[in-house]
Image (cartoon, rainbow, N blue to C red; front, top):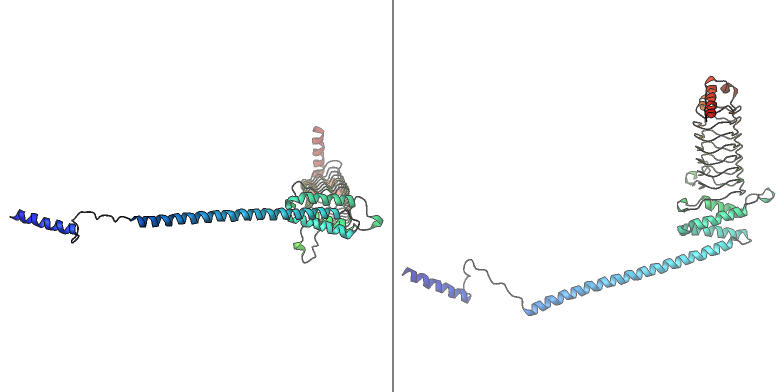
Length: 353
């Protein structure tokens, strides 16, 4: 009886479930709703439209980028063409008879150097050649250096040396007396004045009498036989420069850095060496008679054969330098036992060699 009632109740629940009038049996999974064809087509259309939009945007951006690159290339070509035309015109102006026209050409070349660093070495070479050509002989009648030569020299000395490449200022055998390339320490804008860029410059046999080169960068400059009489070289950097046999009479080298410079046979009479750094400098047979050397730095300097007659030099300075029997010293220092021993030692070393 009880089993019959259970079977009847089970049949009733099953019918109700089939008819949707009751909850599904416990533990059963509800069926997933299926997408209709219309809905599937709609979603596919949206996806395709999105892909087409993305591809269109990508192609559009690429086309715009290509057009921009083409435009930039054309602009660069046009700009370089204009600069080339300016360069050609400027070089042509250098051969004109009028000084004003030549000056215009020099400053046009300076502008080209600034606008196109790639051509910087070539333009600098042109200006150096211009100076050698127009300053190869002394100014006539004792006149000053022509303004066009001064302008070209100012452009070279004030250039941005970072773009030099293989360029080296070659001003050999030029006559440039009285040129002003240094900074004026008394000027309120002196700190803003850039030092003359003459590093490694070829200035052999150059006439630079009374030149103003204070603060100039002359490191490694080749100054053999240069005439620097009365020149202002205060605070100049002459490290490893080679002013051998140069005329430096009455020049001002105070506070200059002349370390390891080659000054052999140089005439330094009357030079102001207050605070000058001459450590390691070669002063072999240099003329130093009568100089005030007490404030100069002479450690390791080569004073063999140098003339220090009547020079104000300390015994400690002499002992810190290299001397020999031909070094002409003040009498009181020459008689010093330690100095004499040093000379004897140097002679013995030379004999041994």
